[in-house]
Length: 444
Image (cartoon, one colour):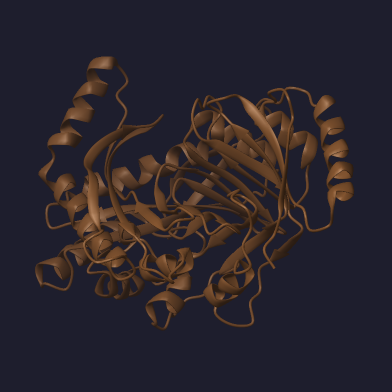
């Protein structure tokens, strides 16, 4: 049965942060796909889930195929919102994975009702699957409008009286530097061209996910922010990297990021950092390697001749970093869906390296742990066939056992080990500050 979608304009603008507080409150089955606090383009979505699934009897992608198969009118966020953890590569790559994560391998919220915030037109629309009828829709609309009428401005707050926390790396600095050397040895021996080596900082605190996300979006605004609450586990992301976008008519794009420099403390220094990034032979080569990998992945599911690089080595600037970003586009072959694109491309080459299979095996041996949600992907799979998934980078995962922040960077033959270590710490610093943690200390 094809779902009917009902729509109702709110008739006025409401700040998404205030709307989330009013509609979702402290529910642990809720989502917010966020275009950022000062967005002037894009659409943010938020709402409560009608169901949450974190355990699967069989392959996750088969479950998602069946769950999204019946279709709906064109409205993207009605469908499923959630994440795929990095260890799901066992399914997509057909390999054994030695390490399991404490987090769910995947988590998906069924979304039958949502609020859509169009930042360009400053309009809010209520969306709902209309199978239950117009009366049920009007009841829900009345409840939401009353909640929004009472909504008050919401802002991020810091607890200045909270004692400072200490974060702990999965590896000491010396261990991570030794792992970089092992990566470069593997590259010299011809086993890989590039390897995305990662680590993780842990903080023994489980703060309120909503308050923490408000601090994160304030300090690190981005076009693919997210708060996804799947029961006991919450994903908070300020990701700048789109993994896959698929339109209902089958146009698929990916925008890998490889190449990072910090923002400068002055305008002149900022310009120098950006210029150095643009001119870096190492960073450009690293980005092009991943572009080639993603071209090959997309070609497995795209029409012959449709895969093209539409943007190469563009600089995007964020609050803490400059990044090199490229975009690859293709058109899905008839009969294939966004789930097939995920199966062909996951995990993203920017989080493994190249060639993908060899890189993933080398990294599993070196890292000797599960990455969990980090390095995976999050976003929505619409009933209309659309997909918008971002990379789980620049993210915090919170559960009752504490909070974790994954970080890392691409290693090539030209990498300077000390610089790679500093880059990994730079990427983690803003996230740890949001958690109230001091710079991480090494293990052991």
